[in-house]
Amino acid sequence: MWPSRWHVAVEPRSPTPSHLPNQGPSGTYSAFLRRYPEYAGTELIDQLRASDYRHLDAEGHCYLDYTGAGLVAESQLHAHAARIRATVFGNPHSDSPSSMRSTQLVESTRAEVLRFFNASPDEYMVIFTPNAPAPATWSVSPFRSAPAAGCC
Image (tube, rainbow, N blue to C red; front, side, top):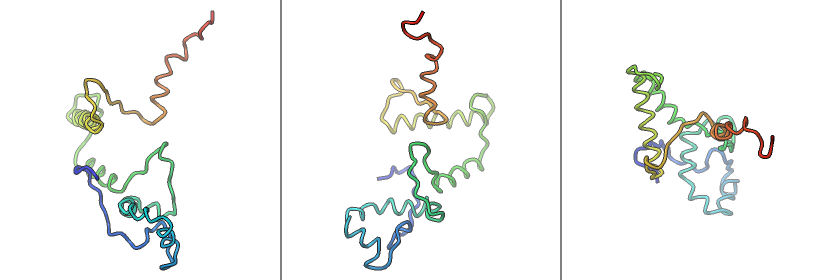
């Protein structure tokens, strides 16, 4: 299910996912599973939540705003911290060794995105933006100063 290059830390599943209360065989989670038995097939999600998103349960959160920003997983934080502890990354628009290292990382990430979507670099380009609305804003900005149709 997960590509082999991804590392997903998984802990043993508890009888009740920590975000669902349980009070024995007649408890909330058991009753839920009796009513919706197909939910038992989502065990991997429960394990991922328990291992990489335990801060949601620690603070009592249910985060659903994935269109605005995805949550950072603990494994992502650890991997990124290890990467920036191991080397120096500079401005990818410069020619220093640290900058060339950044450029190499950006370009390899672009190539990986294209591979993931099975998209040819001859036909597609990957552009990283600071957020979701930015590309829409950039695409309409040239038209803001244009005169309205039928005007003047």
